[in-house]
Length: 337
Image (cartoon, rainbow, N blue to C red; front, side):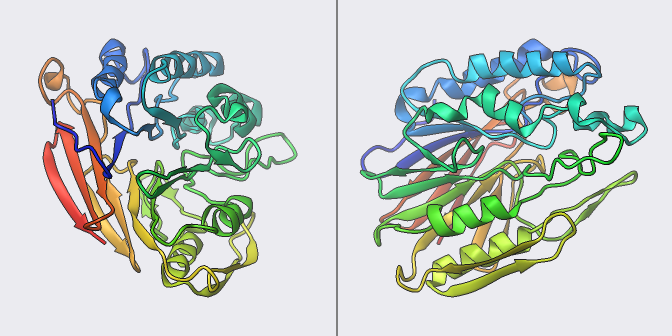
């Protein structure tokens, strides 16, 4: 078991892309749930554990089965312990992967909706003292003794509008989206009144990247990622920015003013989704990708490569992130900021 530093270091566990599913695409559902227990072994020495989305595979044709899978996952992930436990949703969690089975048209009632995620994640109770935008799926929490503000971002923030036949116009499976309300709340609430000696760390399902990703049968688009990058870089510099975008159904227009607050520290943006250990710079922000928990081949079952998750140490004195990958892809990556 990895020794976790104590004292002023902020210690974060991150496990993502578990893709729990019983049937259709996956045959080893018990192993996927056991992967949760692997990170919970570190519960007593972590400040927080984040389940980073694609918690379920969402591949069942019956919505009720996808809901039950998510309930099973949540019950195991949020069993009371020492650390804060945060749940994020990913592009698989709502079941919109099944659009192909519906000839690329899927009624809103056939996915797990935003309001249903709020109920399942129980966001209204503010379980660990976090601040939310009402009962939003995004949040932040301060850790005063560690001088850290953790901001959880919903990168599956799609517009749930429908056409005349009640079919969705946008799908979480194919759109890694950020809407105006979340962007404005992060800019004008979560990134305001940050003490000068605090260090901000973002965590989400998907990386920030304005460029679309082209697959053989579809293109994954990223509405308003460029605007989130603009906001964060303006926050780092302590500047005013006008945030404006014209993506259809994702229009944005507001000001974010960080001049009075002045420059602040951002340690990085932690994410999954891409099923790899990688990193990239978006201006002054480092985006750090973490490996998928779900196995990549049946041969990995029962070996040290069956699971993969990250233990992250944020040293606010030396301005360094240490990202330990446990299991498959095991490595230690150090990032200075």
